Amino acid sequence: MTTDRKLLTELSEKPVFSLLLQYAIPAIVAMVASSLYNIVDGIFIGQGVGAGAIMGLAITMPIMNLSAAFGAMVGVGGSTLLSVKLGEKDYNFAAKILGNVITLNCIIGIGLGAVMLLFLDPILRFFGASDYTIPYARDFMVIVLIGNVFTHLFLGLNAMLRSSGKPKKAMKATIMTVIINIALAPLFIFVLHLGIRGAALATILSQLIVLLWQFKLFSNPNELIHLRRDTYRLERRIVTGSLSIGLSPFLINLCACLVVIIINKQLVSYGGDVAVGAYANRMMFFFVMVVIGINQGMQPIAGFNFGAKHYTRLNQVLKYAITIATGIWIVGFIVCVLLATPVASAFTNDEELLKEAAHALRVMNLVVPIIGFQMITIGFFQSIGKAGISIFLSLTRQLLFLVPLLLILPNFFGLEGIWYSVPIADGTSAITAAIVLIYHMRKFKMRGKLENSNLQTEI
Image (tube, rainbow, N blue to C red; front, side):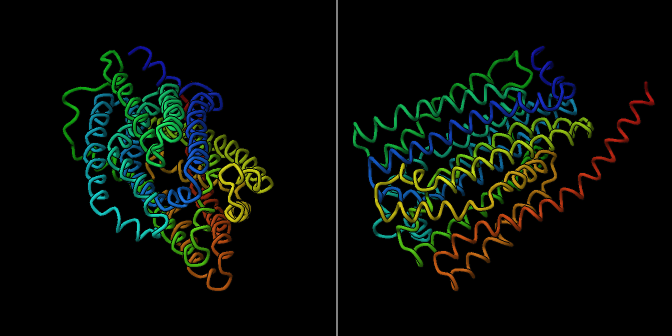
């Protein structure tokens, strides 16, 4: 418990830049490892099963996003609430949050998986599956949905590890899943000839194994935040508080699901299964995951210092996070735009698919250097409990800009209109995020000046 209190002291006293690195580097390493596995997994599937499997995998993206939406609502909402309560030194309430997060993840994970399994074929057809791609998509999703509750619990407990001052253990958990995945996937695909089902089985088994380790960590009674029998019963204020904060990432992922549905349907209409497969290229998600890692490192620091009313430190962590995220996406621009063809060739040998995937990669990433700013801004408002602002910023990109562009531009420019909708939406939403952030940062700067003035008066 002494170690826990020392970690919490660091959140309020350690220099902000080094603190951000302390929390962000483990999260980035974990996200990089996870995204590298996604890339390697795509290569395994593309080379070991075929182009049809890559196309079928693309159809499953909306379902994966929908499941992630519910998982993020509980995990991000609960972990944010935990950070704020730790900043307020309400440790008993914080312990109850952990138990409630586990209960909610079990209810939602099992319920959602069962409903989707029951209506899987109609759902896949609605998302754009053809007679050619639906067998691959079905084989993959049946196994993923059976293990849906394990995925929810794994992600939820990892978020709680970060918020309780254990970013390195959260990193270790993610890296462990990646290592187990990489060991099992080629065994299941190439040796046991399980095809795309092997990739799904490797993912679920790796998460289940590491989930058991997470439960062991939280079962230690010597930790400040640990599992207790009296914490699993749902409490209204915890459920409503977690879900209201988590509503922002829920809507973000839900909108992502809607966007992928629209994209898939438009791609099928204007480019066929090859265009759908081209959209499934996973390299751009590598950089998304890295910036998510920065967000995850920032959020416990921002949430804690917001709860503790340390506004100067709050401003500093936001500034540093934006700077690092922008640098990451500049590298992403170089890789995805300038090296698009060699990147796409790692996933497929099919000439038609390769050509279209490389072109899509170039176009969709034209304005990515400004995406990091937008992602950090949304994550910042989530971390301090400003769900309404975070929801607004996320919905402007998805619903206000991207969806209309996806529906309008293809009528005039065909398949090119679909690809160019993404950078146009990214650019306009980043401008919107900048306007909102500047307005609110002026308020935090004023509070920071007042904070410094009060400290000088006390001295």
